[in-house]
Amino acid sequence: MYVLLYLHILTMFSAVAMAAGSSILVLLAARRRDRLLVASITGMHLDRIIPPLYLAGGLFGILTGATFGYSLVAPWMLIAYAVFAALMVLGVLYSGPLMGRVHAVASDQGADPQAFAEVMRRFRLDTLVSLGGIALIVADMVFKPLT
Image (cartoon, rainbow, N blue to C red; front, side):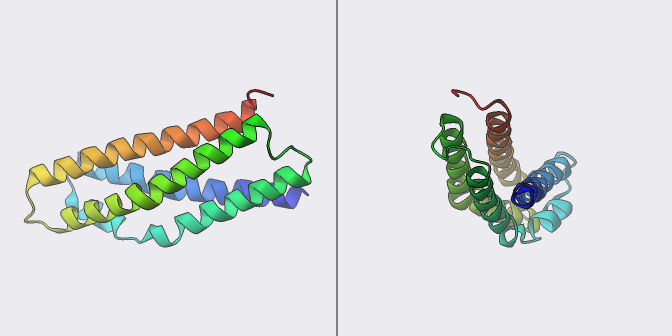
């Protein structure tokens, strides 16, 4: 029983650490205008690791909830599903492709500095939305609203 909880927490911590950590490093490198470092970080192909970790973490979460006897349709669970799904869709449709654009612009040392500034503005906003969603899920899991 606790093995599932452990795996849920471990995979989610790993996914969040990789996603948030790499995003924060990109933002810090961009703040220094170090395009080479931005290109290095965004070129690590974390898109091959992070989504499977999130999917595994979500699956372990559902299995944990069922094993611990939680109602899988409790309001706080439905909130978690909705925010998780929204973040997954955001990641697939926007964040992933944006990471590719950041890499392309940062890798092109001849690219217009305005293009770099614009793509980083979008990346900063995307990072804030993603981190806000993660914070919302954590608060939902801790406080279990509407129960």
